[in-house]
Amino acid sequence: DEVVAEQRFEAALDADEFIEAKDWMPEHYRKTLVRQISQHAHSEIVGMLPEGNWITRAPTLKRKAILLAKVQDEAGHGLYLYAAGETLGTSRDQMLDALHTGKAKYSSIFNYPTLTWADVGVIGWLVDGAAIMNQLPLCRCSYAPYARAMVRICREESFHQRQGYDSLLHMMQHGTDAQKAMVQDATNRWWWPSLMMFGPPDDQSPNTAQSMRWGIKRISNDDLRQKFVDATVEQAKILGVTLPDADLKWNAGREHYDFGAIDWSEFWQVVNGDGPCNKERLAERVDAWNDGEWVREAALAHARKAAARQEQ
Ligand code: FAQ
Image (cartoon, rainbow, N blue to C red; front, side, top):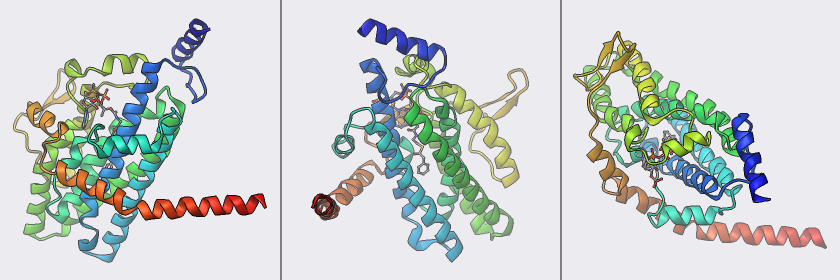
């Protein structure tokens, strides 16, 4: 039976068909998806913190309303993704416990501080820009519940990217010299960490080969990184900022931009828990979880009462 099920699974992948939650799947496929989806969910939730830091200090009512909506969208993305993870048989409590005990990863990018208002715009432009580049191919991921969640998430991320770029464009076109310098400084600080979001180079990425065979990943870390660089260089020109890389130049032979060496030791340091804000971010999530205990208890009590009332 197992053999037949496995043949059916392989045939579905070969035919580019989706795998649904109730279909048979190899344990390793299931585990890989829980790992990636839960880490993606954690990234959305932890990703609310750096920008959330600026909600109370947004420069105008308009920018504050936009930022509030954006941060709220990230919460929604996290919740969809936990729901997609749950279809694989791992509970939300288990996934959150892995985050809170430091066992599960979340994106390295959210361990950097947001020092000025321009950081909020640059996160939209570069971080959401990188996120979309990585997530568009996930809309065609072989696991259907993940792929379906990605469709709506990508639409919202596109709006986030545009709002960030619009806010920066406004500062560059109408701002003071100090505001323009702020945009340049934020670009300098976020550029390299944004390139690291795509993960280690292909030859040092232990999961890529298997994930690509399974149709979980459709494009490799390095290829996505290159697509991101190519798209972003043009956007930087229109914005009027310089990307902090002296080696960045068009390569007519490859028809891509060449770019400088990434500091992978910094990446691994941040991934392994020792970046500028790792401890602060995790502590904030653990506190939020503990502070929310009474809400969870009340919601459960309410649900039990409502169910009992319906039975009567
Ligand atoms: N940070 O073998 P690979 C967002 C880990 S967007 C931390 O290449 P894989 C939206 C990796 O997990 C950000 N860890 O792994 C937003 C693995 O360790 P493990 C989230 C990283 O899975 C915007 C090890 O290194 N997006 O939140 C990173 O094949 C603005 C070896 O790596 C996603 O999660 C990293 N950057 O490829 C929110 C997208 N890179 O797990 C708020 C879905 C690698 O074996 C504001 N995920 N690692 O212990 C993916 O596409 C993939 O998981 C990759 C990594 C591409 C991230």
